[in-house]
Image (cartoon, rainbow, N blue to C red; front, side, top):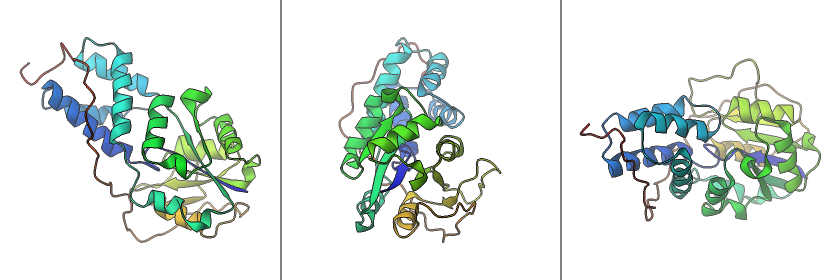
Length: 260
């Protein structure tokens, strides 16, 4: 059986749009100053590593009364409600060409939030298994999390597999360290990978990568450090954010508000 492992956030699902919606909700619900949303967006864009570190920064800046753990817990569950798959992803994963493939998800993050995203978007119905760092106790880019994800998909030989994701360090570098061939999802036409880690293939959208992968690439193909040229159709256009019933927000007492 051939193997295809996918990153979750901003590969299968549009996490960036969900985060922006959460930032808007937070600012509106708590009367935060006009700088709040741009600050929250910039903080996420410049942050690397666990989201706990991001919420330490958020708490230090806005100075709410609630502990970091409470803010982070609420954020995880709310963003899971706001996240949607990129348009066409589910249909591509359900293609008849998937026969003979073990499809899986490998993602960093707390188990509750990541599993909620998977189930809410019905990804649990189209993949054979997943590995979440918060549950497994191991994180990308370490090779063990890819090995564990492959085993959960019924595949033991990682040379028969691919890792698909939007992070050069976590997905491409991590996948290569585990012996996987790699596909980089790069939606920016102005961004090129550094010399290392270099992906085997590059696509502007996950849908195009899935169609190309399931439509004919064999897992034992020669590693080709190439950038596939594809017409600039933007399959990563986000779908509508599902508002749903909001969870009660923690009171950000003492934080920076529009009035002071």
